[in-house]
Length: 184
Image 1: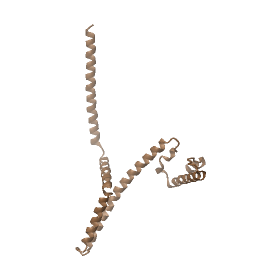
Image 2: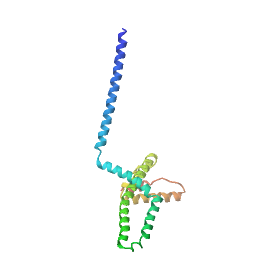
Image 3: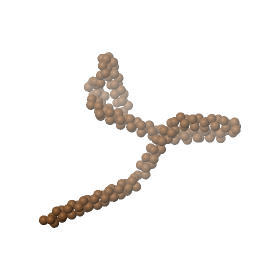
Image 4: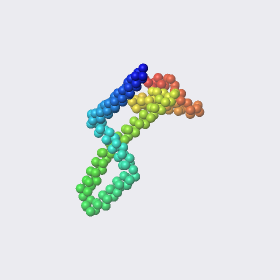
């Protein structure tokens, strides 16, 4: 009988060791799979992520007072050098080319930043709409509506505001007839 507890202890210890080895193997396997997935990641995703980071940093730097001051300084230097170069066509071409290139590139940076900001605001508003008990869920994806549907919805809100002003109450009530008309 004294051997039985020892055999059980040995089995338990072996089970722990085997489980620990399996756990270590699984962690190594998962790490290898993650590394492989990272390496297989699409080139477009890498470029997209890099551009997102670049656009965010650029927009914060280029939207600063220091960037405006630097741009103003470049223009002043360009104006001061005008008499030196006798206001030549080349002198004018330099500033025109530089500003055109900078403007062209800034359009993409600004658009990227605005798209991300708009998407973040939409997601936050969608979450608020979903979280509020009496909110209308059909307001969640308004950005996907046509211009005509948006105008109808805007008119609904005007009518609600006018009713609230006339009643003197902060009414959130929507006429069922208005909702039926707006979905048509």
